[in-house]
Length: 601
Ligand SMILES: Nc1ncnc2c1ncn2[C@@H]1O[C@H](COP(=O)(O)OP(=O)(O)OP(=O)(O)O)[C@@H](O)[C@H]1O
Image 1 (cartoon, protein in one colour):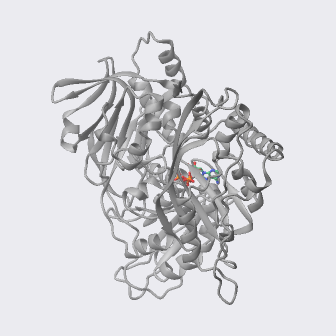
Image 2 (cartoon, rainbow, N blue to C red; image 1 turned 30 degrees about the vertical axis):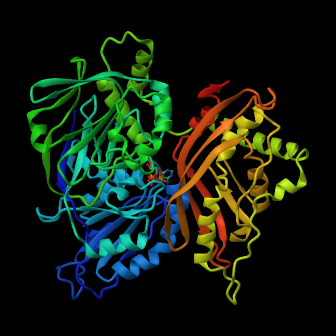
Image 3 (cartoon, protein in one colour; image 1 turned 180 degrees about the vertical axis):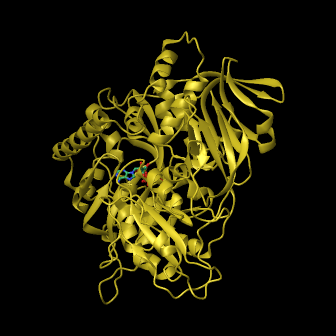
């Protein structure tokens, strides 16, 4: 069964100004337990409008966003203490591994924390949210007065931080600290899915079947799970050939995919989006619509809103009347306050997904594919959402092979081509040699207009190379002076250091591309970095163009979106790290090139 709680949201807010010193309990991964808050509880912040200092527990995933969360947290802590420490007891607990945040949260609530604040991405927030509950009930504090409640807070520092997007919160820790300082509370809904054995799984963002960060991947692996029925005021409604079902409390998942654009986490409703009869190429061709939330107008996409009142009347999704898959119920969690919350789309969400799918499956599958799916979903180890070890090894090998082949074939290339497209602009510096940030950002934006290559394209490049080793003349349309010579370039497949190497690699792409389009959709500025959100599409004419003397070729359409983080060196001001994130799974990208979409002539 699936339902939602509408619960009170709030923050372990800081109200008024106090003068006492904050308790600052620094813990590391080897000391994972929550500090005893009781010793601090009686300390009053003089000048505070409250009779005691607030106990805030920050649960930090040091490994979030590939370790960036841990690094940023270290830098953030002194500021956080100075801003909140005068009238709050600040405790810090670093997670030691998956699910640890659940235990820490439960313990913190039992110890009487005023707020548990997740520091990390959606996965961490999801775990913290699940820590607010135990055996289907809200966790409570034994000692404090009945009216006391623990709030949930968030400092979004993850890779996707999708739930924060719904709230229009940027990945800006200073802003998050201000929110905590202000301490406003609000109510928010939490979805709950009851598992097969009656256990509850809570989600705050989006619960989904088949669609996630790896949209096309799952769709192509599972195909459709069949017809879906639900009861609407006594009438059965049927959705045939459902490919994916998303139940949104928040709007976004998958790193910015606006999948349930009308969902509002404090409305009391879920938005349920159903995709029917989606082929793998629909995910590719309509990906941009899924990302900007305009997919509801696409044929075969439906959106249903569920109100709290209707939940009680018992709407149900059913799979051909056999298995009750999803039913809603509304209830309140007394005295529980949550600030914000999320679902997650990685392993935990897959676990949710697998349970949901399990519910949705017809009992007597005739199609072996479905039967396979059922076996998978019922098992303890649902298919991983991330690239598996062999996949990673394959991609790594692809990456290395493409680079080596590129080097080998560069001997056949005209030396002039290596310099083609590169922008020899020298950027203005101040007396200390620091390049102005605005100038750097401007050149990056201009580079986008010239469609400079993203390094992640190397995955695709491998496929191109094995099939067409002749086409190598491309430009590296990059303003070199904006980057450190030893700049690190990371993409979903690999990472390396050195501007020269980047130039060489991206020079080896390109002439295969027809109608390529690299568009900067949005730019975000942060203290130490800028983030460029982009969309890339191109048509590749390969591999048989040279083999068949250009008379016959196959068009391959490739489309993807993602974002690149540009970290700025504090000394030079130049870009010292260039980290790409692709919204399309790596293997999907690689597979795209082996699936010609159209044969010409
Ligand atoms: N010490 C740790 N080592 C490894 N994994 C951890 C550790 N602590 C937590 N985790 C796991 O890391 C997962 C992902 O973390 P988190 O969501 O914070 O970052 P992210 O994946 O980069 O961000 P987002 O989910 O927003 O994309 C969590 O679901 C959690 O299970």
